[in-house]
Image (cartoon, rainbow, N blue to C red):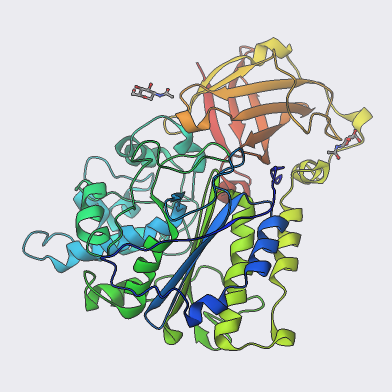
Length: 495
Ligand SMILES: *[C@@H]1O[C@H](CO)[C@@H](O)[C@H](O)[C@H]1NC(C)=O
Ligand SMILES: *[C@@H]1O[C@H](CO)[C@@H](O)[C@H](O)[C@H]1NC(C)=O
């Protein structure tokens, strides 16, 4: 991943004004205010090249929220009480909360229980490539990322409806047994989820400016890059949300909170510093991040301390890193962790960002056993023979061409024969219009796909199959990381 080079000037500060019907108090000068170290926060913003972000804190029933920087890269509009952010995967908790409300309503939804198999609710749409798993996967499995279905993020780049995405799951390879791994997938209830969330969750919680999509028109934040709609929010609404979770308030029931905060799956068997199991310095910690192109988010709660922090920013990679630095600065202050006992979050995040950059080393790692460049094998057919349309029942339609624009920042990999193809997704969603795909020839039938999107780069192995008739018949791409580690590709057929 390449950090976007952003023009960035001195940060401006704005308080987030809070709605009147809000159950929380937002004193103009509160103990929470002193928790926020403006100089520190501005330094972090600058270090991670983020145009703007908002932080909200909830502590002992009081809330404080503040914005830093600008609402976009080419604007001098500061982040204010009106600034909306896309909140990415932090909205998964809203989905779970909404489903808990259906669980509570046994008069109207007796069929919806935590252990209800999804297939019984969506019999014609929801099937997986393994029929026995189809009948077993329950609502809890889906919401706990333990369905066995890996992310398959590329599928979501298409201009198709949520229903079509669900229908295509039967064509997606599974990488893990049920209840084994942390996987992403969201299920839509049979109800219009946007209306349900607004009426049953957000309005009761005073979250009046939380939306399912980029509405109301013109109010959403200036994008730093392409973004797609899920849910947007200003920092004070998330303070209401976090406060309700901490206090276990309505509309979510006691039973609902038990299910939401219960442990459902082991995300990683590896415990690394500064954590010692599912807690931080002996305190239970509940968190979920969010990423989408152009935006990052993090919600962290310490229920035992009645403390929660939300960080929302308008640059994805930077905010995903900065949010940990910012959140743990506050958590350490609340817990009174002394300077010398504090963990070096900034150094850890810097090292991770460095590692995730696309370099020659990333490309060599895809094919660790390659001979010297002079011994690489030629490709067996003319470059133009690889051109064409390639399809898969679930993945986007891939158009491969041998007439390519000059564009990829990494246009000179270390090990390649000097030939390049390029590709595009025919049916991409509007937000994916800036996607750039280049395919560098490595050796024989092996190639490397370099993928640039919203300032991030990634690489995958590519392999072409040639039919006995002598034409290119299929292309295999390491699109799915969960399959890549097992050496399995997604194969698209040439039409
Ligand atoms: C990758 O390696 C090539 C060939 O050695 C070199 O010309 C190029 O500058 C390198 N690119 C990067 C981004 O390091
Ligand atoms: C996406 O699909 C809809 C409905 O088929 C169509 O109206 C719209 O123009 C498409 N958008 C893009 C970016 O192709």
